[in-house]
Length: 225
Ligand SMILES: [Zn+2]
Image 1 (tube, rainbow, N blue to C red):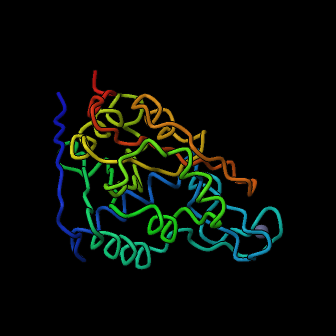
Image 2 (image 1 turned 45 degrees about the horizontal axis):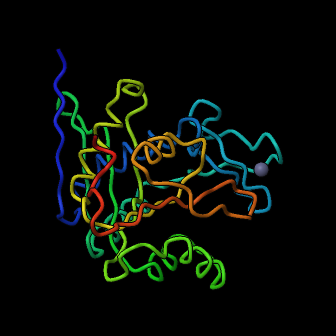
Image 3 (image 1 turned 90 degrees about the vertical axis):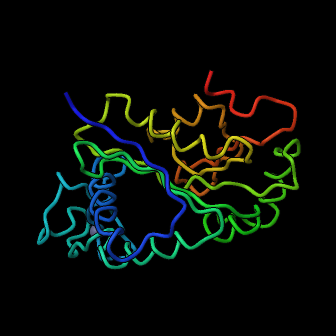
């Protein structure tokens, strides 16, 4: 028997509570499809490597430059602490046998704010995307689903879906927006929750913006059925 606990917090993350989160974040994103353990220090190359593909002192297989950590722990910790102070911040976590094993977090803002913080669309692109979201209740801000991950060795057991659903209970009456890639597990879970693609980036990254506008009079969380 294993023991899973889900938790939801609206409290800012502090310098102590960020430590297990940083460790798990680095672990999650060092695996496929992200492979963000190391990155080439030559900015014109910028190739990234997963934890199983390279070690600390390896040189870039493409250009020979030294590798550096993709997410240096101190910088990542500072970034998460900063994010956790934003309006509407919330974090859902999964504890497996007492170990932090999954996270789901986001914050709230207007589309303009979220665009400035994360989406980075040009003004005319943002306007075009807003057109597609015209049915949304504009009095409400948007919940930006920032990060979502499950410890690699626990994947494939449905915990991700459970954690996502757990976190989304906090957002039954919110406009939802996220950025991901179609190769990410989040993409499929988003779609199962009717968070659909509303924008395809044209920068060659393959990234997409997905959204689910909150529409008064429709079911609050149709994905739960
Ligand atoms: Zn390189």
